[in-house]
Image 1 (tube, rainbow, N blue to C red):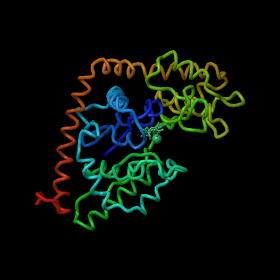
Image 2: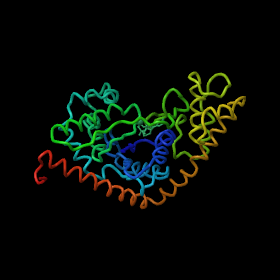
Image 3: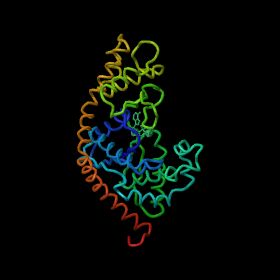
Image 4: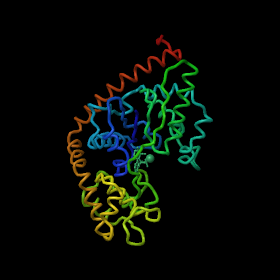
Length: 325
Ligand code: ATP
Ligand code: MG
């Protein structure tokens, strides 16, 4: 299994409940978790900030419970095989299939001539990330499905052209795991890239800020605390409370039957704060000792490199590169 997360913007409780804690719960040897810093360069970026956000995100992943002795946790650019394979796959992928990527159409809308070539072919680098490790399972949200299908097509074409080399990856939709919505706009998901400071609880927020944002979360008309389509605000808070406590939504609806929104929001705030407290404390320790984080990432990169190098030796030989036979 391969999962990547891009070090751009500040990680939030949506990332935590939807991805990081789930990864930690399901972790097994043979899982690869990658901070994909090369993907953060597809739009103009600040070098110092990129380096900082890379270590920062890795620290959050460790603080969320990913165990670097169980899984392979590493930074993409430390394993140069990703870039090398991306070039070779660039020569297998076609302009036509990349032009069909919905995400590119959306991100480049109205500025096609000025966006980077990297933004256009980042799905090819993503294909390289995945198939280097012979991953067959890639847990992604609906928005990434098309990219994983492209990875599969590219891997299949490579195998057909040069002989069996890669396993074909499949997108697996996360089975459960909260989808956390913006607290101010509960019809939109909480996102790193959306400018909505009051609607987004950053993992780095302190307890007071977390409480304030949750107490000010928009609610819906009526006074009942239940999850239903006409109550996106309350539904989102129920989802958060359920994710933070491990209790089911029906249980929580029962518990809060007849109670007011104020009490309910207070309970959500305290539960989220309590769930995040040890994670935030661990993160602070890790940030105080960046050398330890660097060392873990170094070990992860060594392990990833071993596998990536073996795949690349095979690829170089198959495509006819000098010195590889
Ligand atoms: P961006 O706006 O840059 O796309 P993002 O907040 O969507 O940022 P990603 O880096 O795209 O974050 O995703 C990292 C992981 O977090 C993915 O596994 C994604 O499915 C998950 N995730 C992102 N947002 C949410 C959310 N609101 N609720 C649950 N899971 C989420
Ligand atoms: Mg996203």
